[in-house]
Length: 94
Image (cartoon, rainbow, N blue to C red; front, side, top):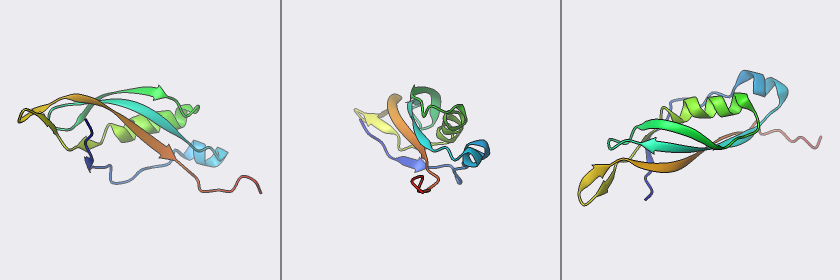
């Protein structure tokens, strides 16, 4: 059962401490989505390896709203994965 986001946070903010240290990565979250499409509970499935990124991923995902899913014509709550990535776009080989 897949649904698409219908409300993304207006701005994804890169954690300043991670930016200063040149850290990027992604966090895989498991989101419990209520029948109206709002994220109501989150858990980290796979950490980025950096607390700053994981915490910001949780705050970002908590603001998401997904298209409600219906079963037999009724909206239902469900679980889904959400990946939040942070990339500085730097070439670290230099």
